[in-house]
Length: 201
Image (cartoon, rainbow, N blue to C red):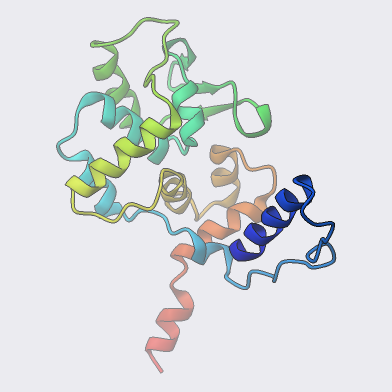
């Protein structure tokens, strides 16, 4: 699929430059991806998240927990200001598609935010204060230092989904999913029933 996209871009550039009028890929479609959605991006494991949290700075810990416990996307976590903390909940004002939602905090998250707030707690200021690129590079470096596989920032959100998978409605509400079918993916990652049954054959 990547090769096809590159070839189409090349011919588009050639047509723009007046070198050719050909458009050989105009009636082609990309092959359907047969990889199941839950096999593409795996969530972080509990031990990986705990290893990362074991000895990190206050700012790093706050970011990790916003994503791993709050289930926030990187862009949502970075957009949060101290004023968005409303008791034991977070007001996500600019979520995916510009939608807002209210996210209930885990028992651990407020403590981490309070500790970081003592260092940097200006109400109008962003809690983390970084670009998405900088945040992802920071997480990549932290995982490398912890000798754990880096699966991207979104894998923290998947981790939150797997923790709540037993009640799909709760997981969907926590993660802000419009369709519960999206949430069912998280159940696939932790569903061991088929594997356990086959193991007893």
